[in-house]
Image (cartoon, rainbow, N blue to C red):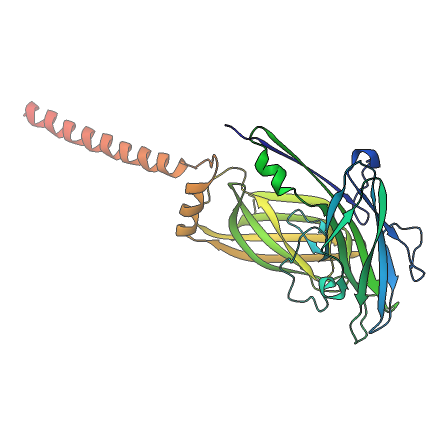
Length: 335
């Protein structure tokens, strides 16, 4: 029997992303932050806290269940990262963090792994914070991530078409100790050919090495032949957001074309407010790498121009040789 799985993920993030209009009646549960006294901006619905070195504090969220059934909610305290789309992400559990990250939010915040919320009720959940003993400038960024626990028994009993709805909330948490201004700083790291969803792309790893957020990042990347002046491929994106001390692979599409081995040059420009960065970096696509990726690429269009030229030249040579021999043959007959 054909089993279809339709997953609807409704992610309500209260920090650094566009708000969604979702009514509590449509959700199996809702989560809101209980704003404490040391909140810097009390108009925000995420946690924005001024802390002290070594400080311990318990913050709270309220889980509301408006349905007639008990809901089990799984909870995670996640370190903020930047995902492959260039957006701050709080939903990844135990992510691979950047080498420059000194303090992970997941090690600072502790909370229950799951909470049972009875039908038509509200439950308050405690999150215990313990700051590093050393003072620091900048911010620590993380997210409290909540999702409905899957009912494995119900899954096994259903032998027909299965429809599974997943509901999730993420509440951002910003922790700072001083008012010292720390500006983000970016670096361009490895540039390499790869694939995303079966499509050939080149990725340029962009890194934010400071404990500060990039809130309105624009990136323009252009690829040339090593010493060429014509733009082969370009990728422009705006309104990107990077978490402190994080990195992501910025993708430049190869436009469904096959990789040609050779040395290329990428030029990248990035801006965030009054800050600007520019990089130029050479990279090489090896023959074996190109063949491997081209073989697995979806609808990779190969350029046969060189083969056509070689074929045309060979055909011309054959015709010239044929004309030469026919000419000699006719001269011999004339004698």
